[in-house]
Length: 337
Image 1 (cartoon, helix red, strand yellow):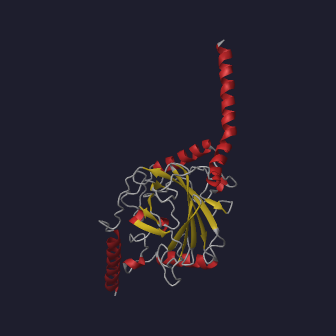
Image 2: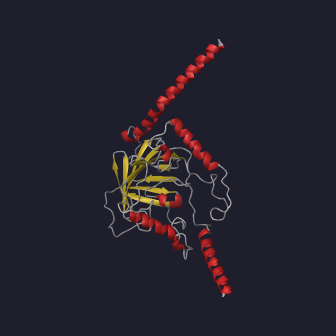
Image 3: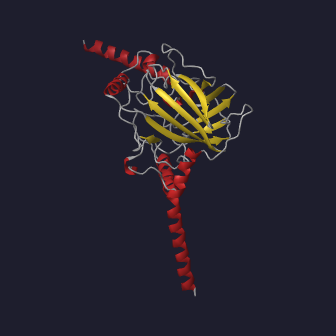
């Protein structure tokens, strides 16, 4: 009797496993299709616009580009997504204390303080890049590669002034703050506030605010260049579309320059999720345009001030250290004469 019962249970378990395996790709396909069909009807603001307001978090373990070992695989199954999440979290939490003085000497940056996310995007994509279909960012042009090499080479030398250091290091602007607005290792929150003619996005990382007019105005003259570019928006059904040009040559996203053109699309997938999709077009930097998509999860907040510069003596100490090294080198040279 007990033997027959065990056999029966084994058969049932096998059937359940097969059923789950068969349904897994369907779940991924349904999640992806939901971003296209617009089946969800979002709430409205008093002005009748789709309501995107609230605090949203874009932290995720989904990579921007599809890893080589996932080549040809556009979506995870739910089981594969869980395994991927566990793998990433386990790797982030392993003991990473290593000797050396060339990096994080105090070991202050570890997963206790990071908040890069623990879940894949809701659509179960294996990469944020959706176009090209291989999930990879197109190569940089020869000109952009040369400019990137020059930037990296310049950072290898001691800084003469604070202006010789990157904007992020100076607490001025982060490339991930947007546009496009992409995940970082922490401070991945965004607060959206709407009025009839404007959408404002408060970016937690470096406390920036993007103010996007919806009144149909044209872009600023091409002679006016801004670190965050010049954004104008409009509604296409339930989707907010934001077009940004007029970037400064002082800022760059993955090798872009002042010719960067970004189109962002915001769509409520459900009460707890926004699908954020952006297209990058910069013919002087990338060999062809490319598009990425991710999901933002609603969070209760609060969203705290990102006090980057206050109490931050890193820049001052970098410059003082470089001057001390130069003085020591001069004194050593004098003794050798």
